[in-house]
Length: 281
Image (cartoon, rainbow, N blue to C red; front, side, top):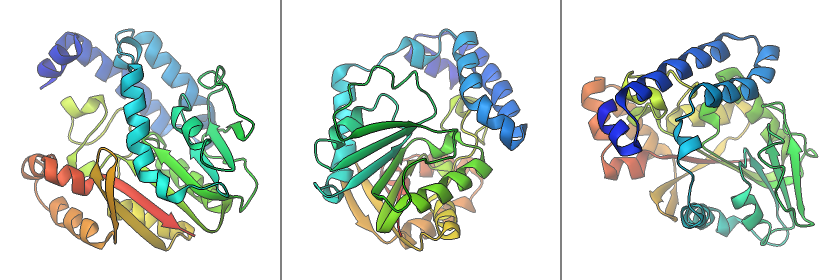
């Protein structure tokens, strides 16, 4: 499998193996580090990974403007019904801020919270747009000020303890009736980091992958008792109760890995199981 992936990426199987071993080594440091040390390590270990793995796909293969625009369009298809000129929007982990900048055209205020000053340094900010630095778990915006919070492919990169703390801080930032939409890979058809070609459980920088029912349990712990799941793909989604998705996930989770993985990885189930969970305060 690694050989097929290497061919698709233009890398050798040896490079894939090197990437895996280095990322696993660094991720283990992060998993085992005490809380205060993790605050420093999140940025430094990723920098070390990119330095030691110069053939890393994120360094070699850059998204085209067309790909980036398509990704923003798909995400806006999910978010647009919740946006208007009265909304304050929070994105945690905005990356290049492409989505947050698009959202800013439709809302009153945007907060883009990230751990890196570098990645957002050259962002041209409109008047209703603020980039705010975080230590990885803090959400330094006014309490009860946010109507819609959002993260995409972020939670799996956090230590489980930090993910819960960040979720608590997002809850504090939400206004009454506000909502948080979290999108993260599903553990049942993972792993989704480089360890997918070698391990059955994520062991790279995806420190923990979740199912919909596991994420729903975390939401409820912090007070997000009302939840809604979204099923679909490519910007076309249907919102529904998470109950059938949770039930399907629990049934699949009882199957042996060799049986579960291809079933959960099939296109219809990937559309159903994709973790897109909204919690409402």
